Every structure is written in C-alpha cells, then in structure tokens.
Length: 188
Image 1 (cartoon, helix red, strand yellow):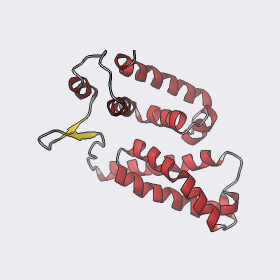
Image 2 (cartoon, rainbow, N blue to C red):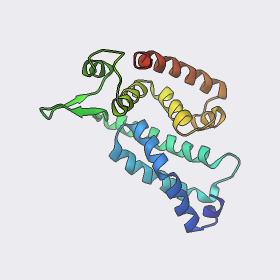
Image 3 (cartoon, one colour):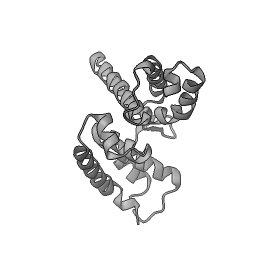
C-alpha cells in the first residue's frame, strides 16, 4: 500500500488482485446481493485509490481496507432505507415449478425431512450454515464474517466496527451461541 500511495500503479493493481475476491465475498454476505456487491467492490477500490495518499501504516492494511468495506456497505444500506426499496432476499431457490422460494430454517428442515441424523451433503451444509449466519443480526454477522472468514483479530474487528475489543468478544460470543443452537441438529 505504501508503494501504491507513492503512485505505483502496479502496486495498486497487485492489491486489487490480492484482495478483490475477499472484498467481494464480504460485501456479498453483508449486502445479500451479488450484483450490488460487485458494484460496491469497485467502489471500495475506488475509495482506496482516492485515499492512497492519506494512508498511514499505523494499523494493518486489511484493517484499513475492511473499514472502507464496512463504510461502503453501511452507505449502501442507508441508501436502500432512504429509497424505501424492498430488497429481494439473496438466499432464494427455485422450486421445480420455477417459483422462487426464500430459504429459511423451516424450509431447510422440511427439505431434509426434519431428520437430524441424516447426513447433509456439502452443498446442503453450506446452505444451512449460510442461512444460520444470515439469520444473525447485522453486527453479529459482520463480526463473524470478519473473524472466521477474514481471520481478523478482536482488536482489528473492533477498529473496523468502531467498538471496543471487549464488545467484539461479547458480540462474537452471542453469535456463536445462536449459531450453535441453530446448527446443533446438523452436527453429530
């Protein structure tokens, strides 16, 4: 990032290549829409480019980057709220008749025959976990995604989310309890 701040375009391109998929994945989870997440990924890197001169290596680059990701996601959600648009749930599936249905814990249990002992294949398990994570409140979901999928420490998450490390620890603890309760029947 220091090289990018010194107007090295190759260094900036390297940052984009290295972090683009992680930023996209995080935004997709936060916003629930792949197409909008792709647009917002471009917005994130545009902000990184615009802010490159003011970057100070006081914290890790990823902490600074995920703070920008968080701000872009929050701005998008505020925009949706102002426009009062109804966002279609990203977790939908098509029934055999071609109708889209929202995936909920009840739908998953119905589709699996409500049998906890049944082994779920990897795709079903991924969908089940995704639905459980999506059912968390916004702050818990963001903390879990940053911690488990991006590997950020409590201190880094606290900085990104403007919380204390203790608040992050508490937030993650409550999220883990909720996830354990929701996924208990699928784990032997």
